[in-house]
Length: 374
Image (tube, rainbow, N blue to C red; front, top):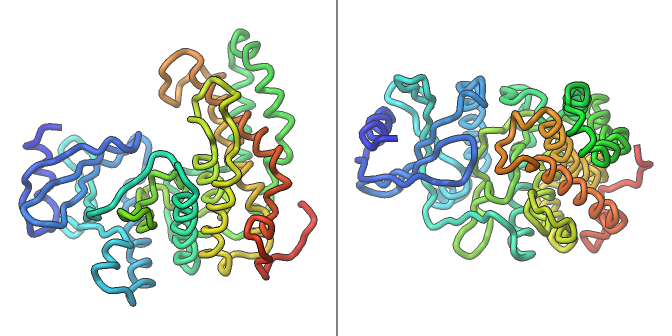
């Protein structure tokens, strides 16, 4: 992106400052994000939203803006300076929209940069795990009274297990003999877990767990912290849409509690970190337990296992399809990713008995009722 183009786009938004320079932010694999240095603070964030991935960008932007307005209303009792650090603030264009379309058909939006803040790519201590749990739990709690049906489903069937399994089964039909042979053991593991991995899906479809506002990309890098490692703000709300609490809890656990990166080939290095799990779960439930039903809470551990599995099956499906979706660095990259995530499922399962919510918290939560495993 040439600086002249970026400056022109910057000036299509409704601000009262001047463009001085920019820095491209590397975090994120879908959108292009730039930190704009301005003549006075606060600086601004200018982002190009990938309309090849997100087919309804106006709907996506409206989701983000409406959720931020809702959060601002819920937290209006806070001092103004603190409020601006706790909630993303979006800037409209000079035409009154919250997105600008450039001459190439690219969509852009603008946010206020939250200064004196940090993000983490990985978790290195229980404090950060706990604080991230509080942050994502607070986000779900504050949005629990927002009508999720008003949100656009920006990626249809994103965490739908039946859909992901149908994709996997179609891939089995078209995969080469070589890839089927190589992945035979992984395919068998996936098929053995099919029924258990549909439990959350069936609870959702039956209405036993409610659809609510969910973030849907709760990796640690989407939690913003202050310089003392205290949680500030949930960021990257592009994937906010209707979902179930287990999506957000499970995806955070998947990314926080793996002792290795998700493409680590040495399976001996891959284990499930129970200390981080307990710290995250404690922070999470301290914030959101009052907004959840007993059945939602009691199925949180299964939600975590389900979200680890859903990534395993997506990587395996892409491997069987000839690596057409995820970027790969070498021929067996998706195979290694799937093997990695299935090893994490195994490590998680070995420790499943330690994940009783009351045991994790060290004391009864009060509203939890014992139920049969559905």
